[in-house]
Length: 432
Image (tube, rainbow, N blue to C red):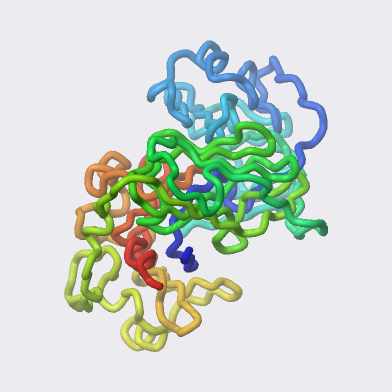
């Protein structure tokens, strides 16, 4: 049986610059880049523009500081970096960072005040506030995004404008017309290198593949992609004699990115199949076979335990227990996360039974995980400590790793900016 639990489901999601940005209609004809020293909304700067190829970008700016094959290319001396959507061959965002001196046509530039920006642009489509006080303002129909810190603009991001339609449109949901392997198939060749799904209509560019180990297949280096507007492909590495289950949109509503071009969300679907041959348990099954219940945390502990937590902030704790131990939580009306950020840099998500199902450790939290990874650790250090993640969520501005041991890592600029302890995904998958 396919199991999914909010906060515990393994994800492979292609997202855009803001986690709420799904697939929406593009607006208008593409304008031409400006030859003047001006940042142009929805276009770029000089000969650096949204929609150009990797080769043209390198020709315009020279060799990047990092791997030219990366989805995020950086030129520190020019104070510019550019991102590519997962599976895309063209630039999705152009970012201008501290030290970049040219301005928008309206005069705004790096270092301008946030109040001046709000006076010119008004209320944003999407606003986001990080624990350190940094603020994001996105203007989707104009193709521009600003980051501010302590009242000043610290980054300007240009992207192709899109039409914002947050209200779910009326209409019949997209329907899956075929899958490969077929749903319920037996004796599937273990050499099969991809799972595909085809819908009955043209779809938007987003996708959400998800599931729980060990039924969810191992994902090699290749990234999920759209073969055409109706068929999405998930590269996999299968083993003989195994039962597999792959889900589409089987997560919370705000993480269901399989949508039609009109924005209608596809109905959650699970694909079950089995490979032929004689198999053996994979590492995740062996590791969690007979696993005891997570231990209670030592109240003096200076490390966070994957799948458990830290001190009283642990999976299964009640809000009353945490309030008694750590005081009244911070005010956070309308948000499901209960926060103790101002004092402990920790917040928790509670299930219907009133017990914590996710415990998140944010910027400012000083203690490491048992692996030694902590806030500020590099991606290289994370992968060295945990190995290949069970699933990856790639966004232009951030990346999420899910590890079966019970931890989720969010990284920005190649460094961990928060991590979340969950019940080990492998263990959840074994529940009936």
